[in-house]
Length: 456
Image (cartoon, rainbow, N blue to C red; front, top):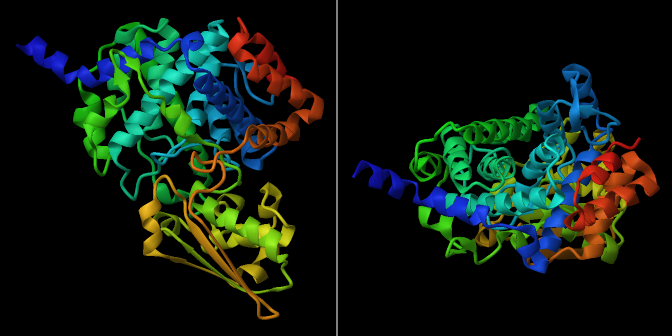
């Protein structure tokens, strides 16, 4: 009876693990493979784009990563696997350009890329084995995110539920797709959950960059333990993790889209690409401002006042008086002001916040409860501008560009990647990195990619 009860308890992690184990790159639908490659490329580009950031430079000086076999992206060297995972993951949040998932707040792909790339390179795994684990891990991430029903208002989504899928994907790659080891990783990491303060970003506390770093290290360690044979308590995901870290946890949703031990639906297709360097909650506002700049010719000089309306969660993390670039990426007023002052919103717009102050003083933001109904799939924003000549313009965006409801085109996705890669690699080497990443699915090895990523 006890054995039967344990098997029943393990049912969800076993179902997830069996579906993960059955994930083989060559057998996946073409649209899933295309999306996976674009997300993997996006993750690499976001990390490389942050290579010149002052926080990244400071971390490198302090941590002094030990030499090893794993690529530190945008550095012409290999380092120990844990140094590579930690530093590559930390870079994902510095520009706030990491991927997102539409049906729950979080960033699965940017957690998966640092871990899987490191394991594959250290262990000389094939590109297809790495990509199989990537898709399997993403599918588990997404189902955990959906099943939580949302996270408590104090909890940051970065380093949260995606960690479970990362541990599963790492166990997948380390064990050759052994379903039992994957199930142990799922329950193991569920019992070792990390949780982080959501409001560090509003304060501009750059310890925030350690959230994905610590979460990915945690996932890697648990996966290695599971593959080594350490056993987890069955049912930890639905007994412990879900009820404590979800606001409306529904265990039944964990197995949605699994039939006969395989994925019958792919949540990776509900991923989104961030086309603005801000928190995703602000992207409806960002899009609306872009429209108004194009339509009304907004400039710092002709704007009298701006009224912004958005949903509750966006206002809760709005940094009204940002003092550094991280806080500015969570500030509605700073993002709107930077876009208007420079004609478009990009990272350099947050480098000198003092020059934005006069325009920020003319911008007011508030919560509009009517917009809450569109969350989480939507990130709604309404922007109304009054010009000094008396004219008024307004734009409303519910589903920002890059989301499944307003998909980023292939050109937009690849332009974003190229723009970020060029910051470190230059145009020619960036093209080589991108081309190599996008042909991973037909490569036997990842060595061409890692060699490209190490180029100066």
